[in-house]
Image (tube, rainbow, N blue to C red; front, side, top):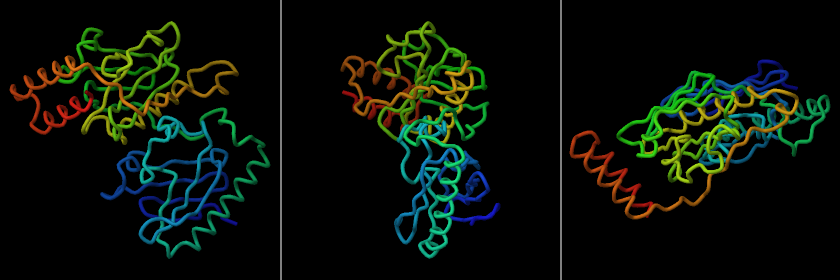
Length: 308
């Protein structure tokens, strides 16, 4: 049986096994994924976990994987399955030589989950009634392609950049969204095509159903791009907003109702050729004026052409 304080050290992280939780401490080395470095450490209560597995990894490694319950971790809820395996904070990669030790801890953790489930009966197929893993703490901010996004714990603010924001966003002006007016967040990874972060507003607080389909025309969304809105900045931001939205709920139903997390469409929507041509023309003017670098011009032009 594991004792409080037992430690298993892997590549990029160390897991400390406690009586009712697993404390994950991430390394800060240059090879450690930036998301892990941004998270620092996370305490995962046993009741937040659904299962544990140990499988062969790549290049002489094994992987200890703890699977969180749906609705237990705002970070994983916001990610909505978009994280690469190498960026999953619930995976501990170890040298194959430590497989026996890893199997021991996997068995002990499974036993701990069984005991916890016996004390607190639950249906593993149902989402957790509340977030059980702490979200990243506000204040948080990141630079998107078209705006600076800021979250102070009470409201989300978008401050548009004139070099990236669409005319629709400039017309709408800088935006402030109190948490009380939100009911969810949609995060599309910047590692995918046309990534963005969109705020989902409650009925009566904005054009929830009539919102523009394209994120770069929606004042409630910011768009990512090459070097803008990286995972280690935008995902913790989205998770913190989700946790605040859940915390702002009142009444017994609020704790049981999962915060909506929209799953982004896989196929990007296409733009009209005239619109793309106008955006490229404007981008060219910024480039000639020295406001956009050669690399930024080439990368954004390629993105726009790909949308035809």
